[in-house]
Length: 265
Image (cartoon, rainbow, N blue to C red; front, side, top):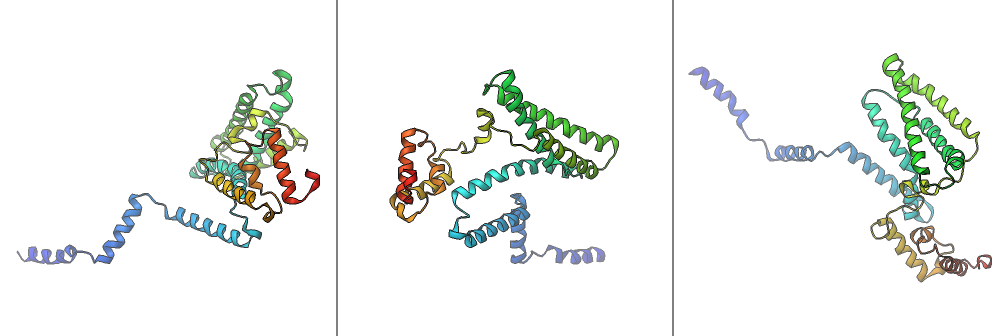
């Protein structure tokens, strides 16, 4: 009986309810855990927002957060984001790939040569299947290079750092050798539309950036004298309307009135 009383007395402190503050902290922690919120990701997003705000403040005329600049940043970071997505799988396996950029350059150059030099001689210029064949060649070539380097790492036992460092030097040289340091252009018309092309595929109704561009465009139309140059988002937001020759002439006339340049008239 004495042991039972002692053990019951020892358990009494454990049965006491936690203070309200501790329960609040625990519930908040459990809320984040149940919602699967990554606090590290939130920290990185907050740091990114702070960087954007600082650039918006220090850039001349506060043009960093304009629709046109946001569009440019999206285009420039899309390729890096795609490569980073694949790099995650490599890092998860405790490996590294230093050649990803060089492989992308070599594969991209091969795709350009295929559609610019080879396919026009075989199936003609701007053939409907040109972009299909080009994409297939790129996928096969990229998979072959990856399989080659992966085989050396997995079966030969060479560290991935060494293999991909050598691949970085090799494939970068291959990319330059295929084009001899020259620009290969123009590309197939349908191929250039992959991913939305240079103007994107999202209409102004659904795009926040395009809506913002339309608002700034109306400001320019109401008071063009306040804008010494046509805002870059003017053309971007209304490119569909200015595909017609008469509309293009109207746009040129508006630009000449705003800039006072008779050469554009």
